[in-house]
Image (cartoon, one colour):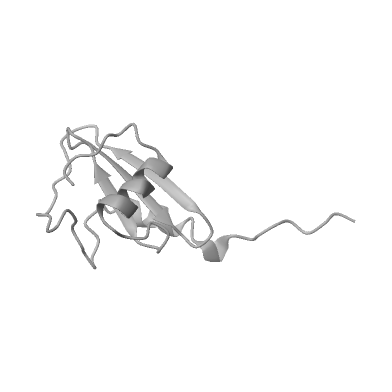
Length: 104
């Protein structure tokens, strides 16, 4: 897919996943979208509770991307900076307490 219009939000990026990649954006996969300059990425992820949008901008340098096949890179190991996976673990649906109990 190349670079992405970074003005797009959650819904616009989810639509790109559905129409451009023919994938389900609510399936639990991470979808990472690079900006034109390579220093900004946006990530959408549905954790089973709701959709999340993350953005990461490098102050220096740019992200290095593996070669894409059919418009996407599929990896089973992380290709993101080490700081991203712990960020995603902190919002695990297992830690979502749900609605607060009624007050007595």
